[in-house]
Amino acid sequence: MENDPVTETGMKTLLECKLAAMFPDAFTRRRVHRILQNYGNQRHECEPDRVRLAILKLAGADLQSVEKYTGYACADYRDVIAWAEYPRQARQWEMPAGDAKQKMIEADLAEYEDWLHGN
Picture (cartoon, rainbow, N blue to C red):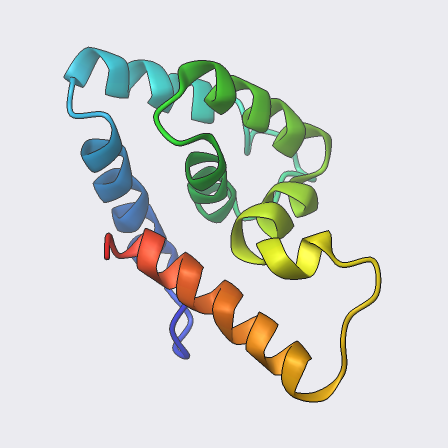
């Protein structure tokens, strides 16, 4: 995300915008919203809107995938965040050094920013 941290309100707004864009049908959008609400109810389930955005990025517009990734998030939200926000880095067993590492970080950030803001 951008250098400035996104506020909780901003994250909620981004989530609603992504839901509307990905699921233009109101019935389906409500169904997806209900599925996403399964994450964030337990004390250990941190940053619910950020994790819900990560679920949407990973699942796309597939309802079964939304359910699957929501389940993964409930088990360990860090996996879902890593897969969505840091896909190249998450696939590396060992991080490269120097310029290669920086390029990977920048590519992950650009990909997430593009997806998040609909570019």
